[in-house]
Amino acid sequence: MPFQLTQTLKLITVVLVTIFIVGGAVQILATDSFLAFEYGKASFPPDPFGYTQQQRFILASTNIHYVRTHLPGDELSKQFLNGLPVYNPREVSHMADVRAVFQSVWRVWQAAFILLILLSFFLWKRGERKALASAIQSGGLLTSGLILSIALLAIFGWQFWFNTFHLIFFKPGSWLFSYSDTLIRLFPVEFWFDGTLTISGLSLVGGMLFALVGWRGKRLLADL
Image 1 (cartoon, rainbow, N blue to C red):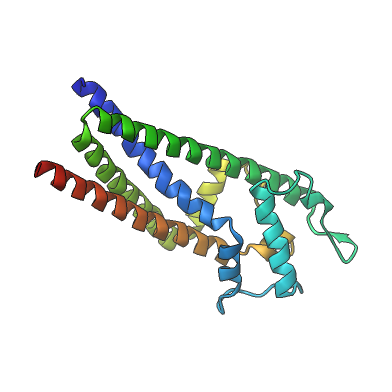
Image 2 (image 1 turned 60 degrees about the vertical axis):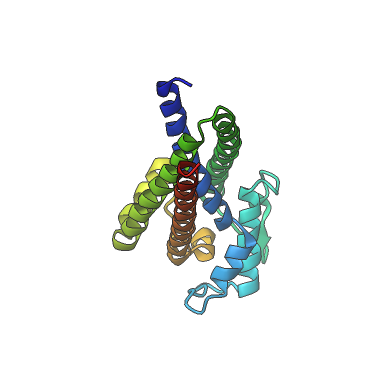
């Protein structure tokens, strides 16, 4: 296979590995299991405006299933508690934006996974096994370095990271709410900080595992 083509396919594989690892970690954040883990922590702040732990979990879980499209598009606007709407129109609008972003990320992750499998199979069958192993190692190292940088930024410059993330994906100001609004009560800053570190930790471990597999593969192929 031409050298230039091999290098191009290697580069694509590196990018796909990074998307696969990070995207997979992001999916874990939007689960009832992670929500239960967060709410079960002794350090997790209680709701200062009166939601019980059970009410809070049910509402937050509904939010998560809405984002994952397990529920109809108008589900949040139909949520009432004690005769009052749970979410105001700005919150409903923002969650519609969150749902759109999450679904886009999900589709990109699915496409990356399929392409990674196909490309790996193609390189393997064409005898470019060392190139494949090298790409897997490089993808793991790239993921680890990128995620480590993000984690450090989140730890030492949380507000800057949080604001920058939202400015990339959402309209300016559309994600700012009062402390008495439901979304802040369900998902306080501690939830997002823990979530960022969880995604970073899982991605870092995944990146190191891919790097190890790629490195080991190169060693084995070199001995043949």
